[in-house]
Image (tube, rainbow, N blue to C red; front, side, top):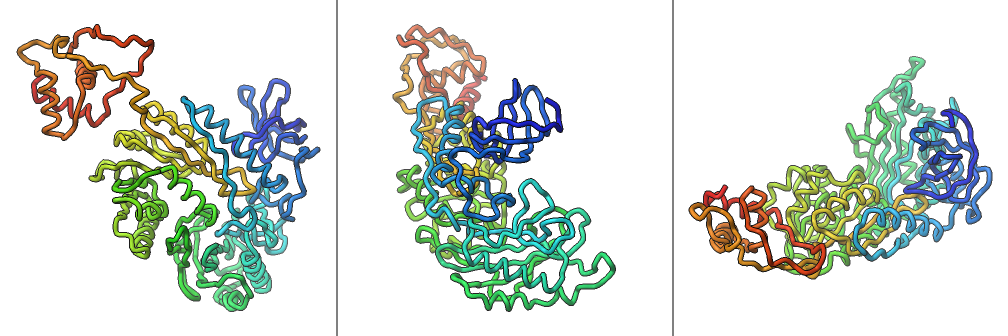
Length: 553
């Protein structure tokens, strides 16, 4: 196989999230946005050690289970992946991918509960970032989503099926207005132009809508003309307010962004109408959401996700819970009414401020939120958690941070992941330090895409999984009589100074770690390969302190 050449083949399977696998002779080629059973034509982009990556050119023959997409933009738009599959087929595909990933990572038997349906499959998104551009070079103004596989071309998504009619009406209104004005879009290659993005957010349960136009501060045309007067005309705001909508527009904003990157960034925002936030309600709680604050993009799906996580967490009465990577504190506030205390940690300061506001809005006094990197903040936490909830970003948890989380030694951890491949990597470390996966379930928050949220319950190995060995190790201790303390003296010191109970076995383990000779144990268990409990980090540090106190190390 050679780079740049065109090949044909049958897609054998699809790997997470949307990589179709085609076998060409001895080479395995991944072709994105394809389905098992399709015959595809692709161009080879690269190949290394028998593994290639191809760019889809055409689907020559559809798969047997394909359907006609409901969305007219699907063939061109890059916003969705699987509009050509029934919702049940999508769910089964995600379920198979998730199960395969977990089976490859989980080392003990566990319960897999499949993938739960999104409560709403169509028109489920509560947020869209539409881009201005053109569908072809020097074509008319477009507003919508990036064309599939293209960085520059934009597909006007005025019939998009993953948002409701209010989104579509707002998009059409704004596009027609600026078509008439003749204002240029921001050209990503030349870094010239004015119109960049249209941000629309709508609460599923309250119906409140926030609209934000994102532009540059540029006012000179490339031909030297000036369009500052046109840009300053805010009559589009009046046209929006005149629309007949199911929901209610509560705020219209104008954000300026001169960043070279193609991202929605807030350099400065002007409020044109109403307020710069809206309210959403989930599971009886009220949340104040600003234009750029994080909130799950599927409100009804979020309720299902958090209910699922809450059921996995189990008994919370009189418990201290750590919500790490807490975002705007949604999970923390769901748990606060049934917990003793909840501590949230989040690196994005704006999200932490929003969490504090929302906790006050809901009358929750047993929530506290800390701004900072979990890796750095965790050492300064004074509370001792009874259980931990993890909801990290897509890349998962930094290994050093995960190690510190493990060192808390809680009996239960609930891990919520938006990227199963990152989850499986973190599960390896968690299992290596004594946690086992009890059960797992997927929650489909993103219909018609390849993504899925995953909830995993982990627990420390149960006492039944280990063999307790009670020995009089003082008789076996080979430490010189002049410098040694008895095992009981070490136990008493650790209990008095640290409030911890330690066993003879743990003391023996730490002595060996410190190079102190310990006699051979003749009272061995009869079973083969017994699982012997290992001393937790907290108790290890306490035992070492005792050994130093008695001048044994």
